[in-house]
Length: 281
Ligand code: PAF
Image 1: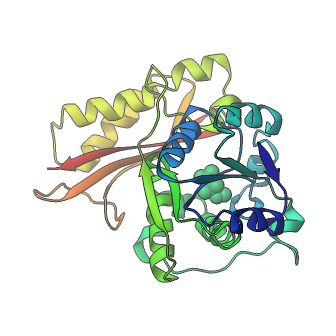
Image 2 (image 1 turned 90 degrees about the vertical axis):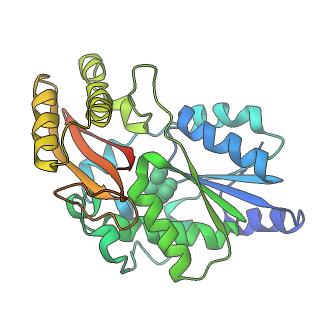
């Protein structure tokens, strides 16, 4: 499997291929969720680039960046079965930001006003900056993103539209552990007891969805928080219901509209996010 650290080498290899290229942008610490994106990309493209780069400009908290898991060797082993189609792009900070770290200032309207956008100021400017750089360097035909980071997915779609980029964004369903916990690189940071508690997040979202007993979001929030409070390990940062298209949180559900639950929950110092589609009411 070819591993590139510079876009120059990568693009000279890709130019000689002149075929469809699927990009799977990651920050490493790969898990089955990432591998599902890679598998889909391999089915739909001649070549697949997996980028592995922990982007400092999207972290609004230095401690979070410092403890982000770095597992490059293991990541490359996990990617090995796809080696016939796969090119890995693992750039340095100098390669990505030769003139020093910066993030552009974007206007994504309501998409970045709430949830992660509100609780992690500047996060999506950092994400959009690095994704724009990655698109430029890897020139993909399609790029693959997970539904778990649904807000990120909508932001990237808006970025592609705003910048008139000629690539398609492919949404891939959240991959979950058997007990329902959404797969995430951050799950590696959980202690045994936090890991045991964490599935309660998804279980509660699902039971809210199944029992849609109310259209009053404050009741739902109350229920969600009360359920999660049963565990000493979990602390809810936010729970909200937002419209799928514009990501604006609502207080009541209206017929005919599409909504999603969004939540961020701390397990100790590890922050877990999840989202579940409510569908059309
Ligand atoms: O979802 C992620 O892992 C990151 O936000 C991304 C898209 C690779 C940008 O750094």
